Length: 155
Image: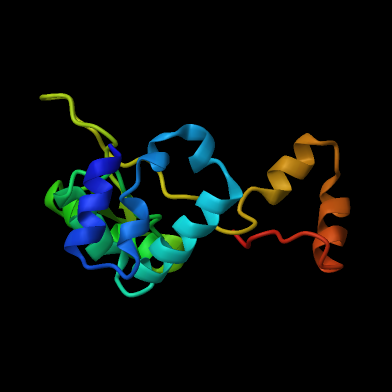
């Protein structure tokens, strides 16, 4: 598993890649040492800062290195694999006045039909209901809302 990583660093001509081409990296005790951690970070972080997450993922995969990006929402919406599999679904969300994009089915089982459920609640939509279930009266809930302690969405 280490050899493909070293080959990747060599192929990329990463500055100081040679430090990785040493048998002591195979030893778990060495990899856990402060020296190894510091050296790895010094060389690999400098390399990664020169490239995008997508480039690192593609290049790592091409070299059979187990590497995966930490994706934010934008990355996920633009992910080619998720787009190819038609993962993202649009849902009309009347309270926000338009469509919102939601994750689709996490898996596909033949002819099993999957559909989006109800829209997510708007801020404060269930506040009065929950406080009522907790024993607050309508007058108390109204007072809390008026004081800005809670938000109760208008119906």
